[in-house]
Image 1: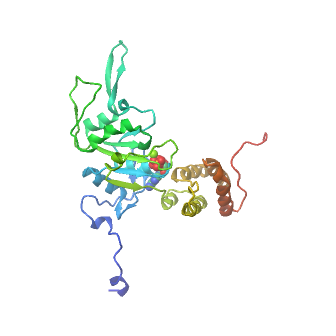
Image 2 (image 1 turned 60 degrees about the vertical axis):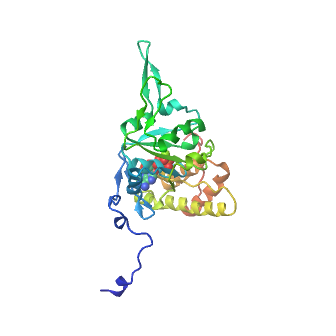
Image 3 (image 1 turned 135 degrees about the horizontal axis):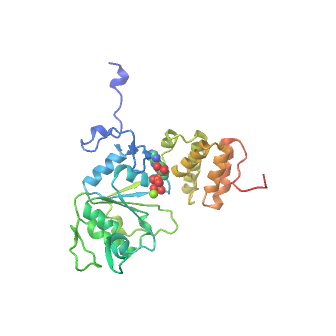
Length: 299
Ligand SMILES: Nc1ncnc2c1ncn2[C@@H]1O[C@H](COP(=O)(O)OP(=O)(O)O)[C@@H](O)[C@H]1O
Ligand SMILES: [Mg+2]
């Protein structure tokens, strides 16, 4: 046997296949319900998709945090094709989770289950997107089901039996720590998520998905600058995430050149004070002048 093979060190994290039988998977891609391909990522030595499914089997709730467009929803949908998704917002009420009475054509009322009630009744995983937009009095509804309570009581239906929480019910949530409208999550809620996972864009996956190298390099360069800025007490610099990179790829596929795609990236920067730096990085990588997209004179 070749000596170099014998002395090769064990990887620090064991490969997925060596850890527990139930959550190993060799799948190199997963297909989301919308038909998009998901490229699984490493999560502490496991495939993220397989690990999430295992955590769900064990009733260990997961909270994903990260910039918009970094891949939180994609992971949730790849792991759970039967996901019940709730887009949380500041005006939501308990009825948005549990259900409400809707008017019928004949002037009466009919009850419509909300997503939490559906997920509990049918034993499905539920994804609370942007959970930090959810008002505090609404989120307290989650406490008892996350504590393993077997029934969901619906106050608006005092005449109906409480809904039994079927096996398979699960809670997964995401938030963007930097979002302006978002609140801080209460400690009571945070502590009910056993596993908190930070999600940032996987630039190698962006390459595999066909994003031109120059555009990935622009994003990676901005990440380095952002980290440096944070290191010196700043809030960081805007960096294009997977969503923006895939949009830029589609521009190049549609026949626009890289300069146009870079201009489009610059125009997506939500922080005006970061625009000059984003332009600098684009110009450095592409070697051409880059300006935000704007309409000019009649052509
Ligand atoms: N690992 C990945 N493999 C394939 N596509 C990905 C991956 N991560 C993110 N994407 C794609 O990036 C885009 C943005 O991801 P999304 O999950 O919607 O972001 P978020 O929910 O964090 O705002 C989607 O089109 C998604 O399909
Ligand atoms: Mg999302």
